[in-house]
Amino acid sequence: VGGWLECVILCAFTVSLAAQTPDVSASRPFSALSAADRVELQQLIARYSHALDHAPPDGLAFAELFTGDGTLVTATETFTGHPALAAYASRYRAANGGARNLSTNVLIEAVPGGASGKVYVVAVRSDPAGPGSIIAGGHFEDRYVRTAQGWRFLRRQFFASRLR
Amino acid sequence: MLEAQPAPEGLFLMLHVKTRALVVTLAFLRMAAPAQAQESAKPTLTPADYIEIQQLVARYAHAIDTCSNNGYDYADLYVPDGQYSNSRSKTKWIGRERLAEAAGGGKNGCKKLQTENARSHTITNLVIDPAPEGATGKSYLVYPGVRGQHSDADHSGHVGGYQDVYVKTPAGWRFKSRIHVFPPDIPGSYKPAD
Image (cartoon, rainbow over all chains, first blue to last red; front, side):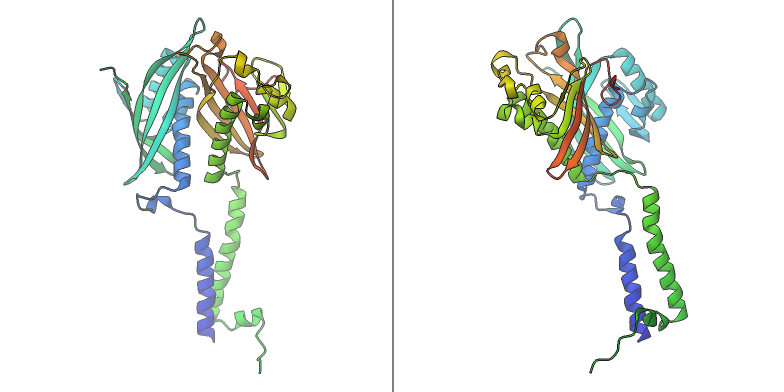
């Protein structure tokens, strides 16, 4: 009796413990982004604009949306690592105070090692003496990875709209 | 003939001593895990919560811009004692009737649809965070108008954003409060005077 009883009890405990083991999405096949992953990535993309346009001028809140070795490629320059990214955000805000970056049409896809995204962006500014104006537009092409702190930008590159 | 079943403690005593030790250890771990979880318990939101709040915010724009159901579709996006306000006025719109009026309906009869420029509340960059009462949100707001011109300069183009508190009711997520935060104040960090 002891043998099968031990087996039943141990199996029951094992199943019980497994049921409360946290989901480790990093080990999932790359084709399986969960609903939670997609929501968190949407939130990351929304936070980018708030951090660039509104966050304290030291730029740290902006930089921390990227991995430690993350890269931002603008129309003219490349910034890699938190110090460079923070400096970019600080400089952007000083030069474009009042600009607001609106992100729309968020497209997220699973790729090996994380996710990729394409996001439209329109930068607008309200002129106190006149109507609001669109000062830039285009799209981002992104790579995201999941870190211990959540999803982060590994790379974000801006492609400006161009007139032909 | 039925045999008497051993009591649970009898079953336990039938196990090998090493197995008993293992069972006790596993039972301890099972009890300890929820305790650890409680220690680090923070408000959380499910993906469904995020999506429902995103839908609530999208419905807000449609309801206020169309003044549908004489503004009551807008009012019903709030809890019964919900309130709308903005950072440039001390006026607060509290409760269903006042909220319907805020949308241009109620006793106002949606006359704005014939007399005012359409605002097309364009809401983007919605960031949602879990909070003890439910959730909070911050977003951007644009009145695109015609080439950025809607009415006066304060109500054209980029006009700041919203700062929200949401609560989950039996009928779904609803606004507890929404503040239109005009520049230079910042949605998410605006502190009302009272």
